[in-house]
Length: 240
Figure 1: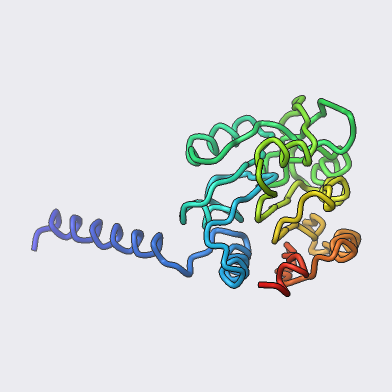
Figure 2 (figure 1 turned 135 degrees about the vertical axis):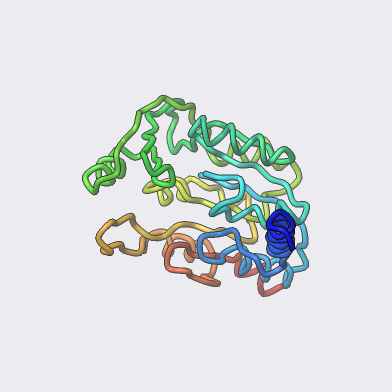
């Protein structure tokens, strides 16, 4: 067998293995398998194509809490303030509505956005950005980004009901944003929220106020992957 033929066979095998992994029903795209947990919950609630609001979307596929659902035919709204990440996201997730904005918590309509060398740490929080910088994470640039309130996004894009899933990962401002959510009007079945602080020295801490606030709004902790907590509407779960 010639070397050329061997190379062709090796490439074919790699292609087949990649296709097998891509089509595997057990493959997760989230950081710690959160999407598989949420899919189980949605299936139990007989919601097979959930809609979603992905805030701090980052990447169309990698470390995404919503790509598993997108691949299965779901659509939603994805919020990404970083213009470069937004452009990549929009090109890869054409069925989604992609917004190059941040989520505001007041009447402020613009805010400084800190773009770090490690883009998963991008943030609107000056405190978080400086904390990351002190830990060795370079701040590449600071840009002004328009802000939209979370309830405005929901009302404008989910006309008949709230999204089934809200994924929230915005580096240090998750609690401030979730406190502005109108639970009296909108009751998504699931919230997936980052509930851990950033640390380069393994001294991260769970953000207890987020968990307490969600429980106070009658969302139970269905699962916790240490980095993210998955909250499920208690009444909707009971009535599944």
